[in-house]
Structures are given as structure tokens and as C-alpha cells.
Length: 139
Image (cartoon, rainbow, N blue to C red; front, side, top):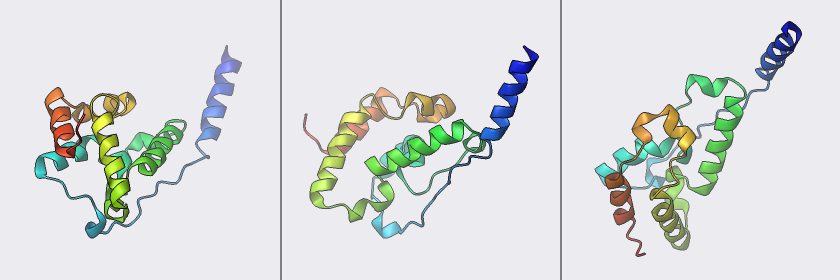
């Protein structure tokens, strides 16, 4: 038992030397998505950490294996939709992204794992409806 615990501890310590890169690229306000204040408030609390270049990296994002998971979520989130570079998207791509916001706002975003660590990201039905209406997407 002690040997197993010691091995586990050594592996955990070794994992800490495999750090991920915490990248927050410079942002140009002219390229950011412009939203009404009520939408901005919702997006800042529930979306911006994974979907902008302005991620707030919490202390546990520096502890492996959590750091690897968080880095993966942010990288994938930015690839799927990045509010910081909205104006670089073509009109067609913007329309696709708005449809994606419409679909995911209903239930799948933010991720449950994010909500566990960020209570204010747990959107109400009213907030989800507001986002969906704001997108202008018709069912």
C-alpha cells in the first residue's frame, strides 16, 4: 500500500513537469464581436474563458492533469468559435457560428465541467432564451 502510494505520488510530481502553454494572444477590439450589454455579461461569465483570446487561467489550470484538460477545452473552444476574431470571419462563417450559438446555447454549453468550477456560468433558461433570440436564427 505504501509503495503504491509512493509510486502514485512520484508520478503525480513528474506530471507537473509537463506543462501546457497558457496562450492569450493580443486582441484587437475592432475584431471582437459586438454584442448588447446583457449578452456581453452572459458571454463573459459563461463563454469568454474558452471562446476568446482573454482566458482567465485559474490556479488549478497549472496543476496536471487538470492543466491538460483545461488547455484542451480552451484550444478546442477557440477553434470552434473565437469572439476575439469575429470580424475576421466571412459573412457565411458568421452565419454558421450564429447557428452554432443558437444550437449550443440551449443546453450543451457551457460544459458541465466548467459550470462545476464557475457557478456564475450556469445559465438560466431565461439567459439561454435571450441568447437564442439575439442570434436571430429561426428554428
